[in-house]
Image 1 (cartoon, rainbow, N blue to C red):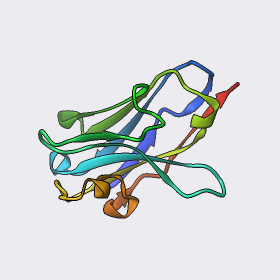
Image 2 (image 1 turned 90 degrees about the horizontal axis):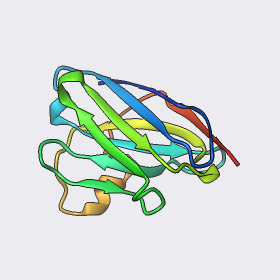
Image 3 (image 1 turned 180 degrees about the vertical axis):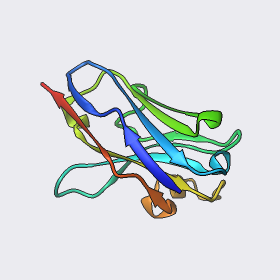
Length: 128
């Protein structure tokens, strides 16, 4: 699965951006997808996850209520709508695909090791 993230840019505090992740696969609907972010010198951290079918959606506490993850199966695209952006949201954002649909341990949805495929990242910068 090849993933291509786009939509990053420079925005002021309180602004919005929508990230897109286009997946080159004929089995798009079978995968769960996640967004992660990383700043230099820190580990890549979980942002949001959307499962396949009617599976669960997860958000990190830091973005809950501000970010919304969604998917368009016919267009093979996953979105991350980011509202009320803050300087601490500045990072490179990565989309990732997980071929496993369900976990008993909900922590696995947030674990970057659960994702087999990664996009190249798109930079988001939020100015004060």
